[in-house]
Image 1: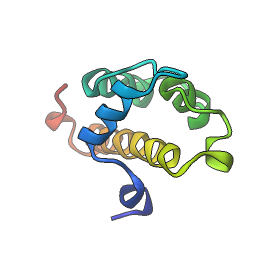
Image 2: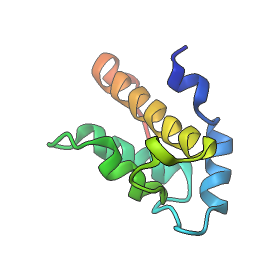
Image 3: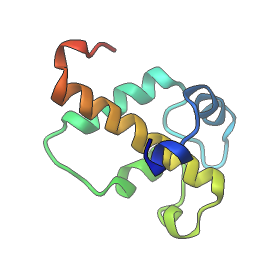
Amino acid sequence: MSAIDDMALSDRALEAWMAAKTAPRPLVRAMAALDGFLTAAVTGPRFADPQDWMCPLMGLPRDVLAKGSATDHAVFASLARIHNRINETLLDRPQDYAP
């Protein structure tokens, strides 16, 4: 396990956090929508700095890594874990990928 995996929330806890967070509200509120967004990010034509899209996606401040709370860091790590999982599946086992 990596440090990201150790810090990340479970999928269930992340979905509960997305549903409860109100200010600012995340752009996605369910795991299915998050999986779709992250799949688009993985397969998109341009690699962007993760903070440029992860922070607005989840309603986190742009400087979350420097000044965020432990929960903010756990949410950011959760997105990184899911992004990495999708990327690994598409690269190594594309036949296993299904929404």
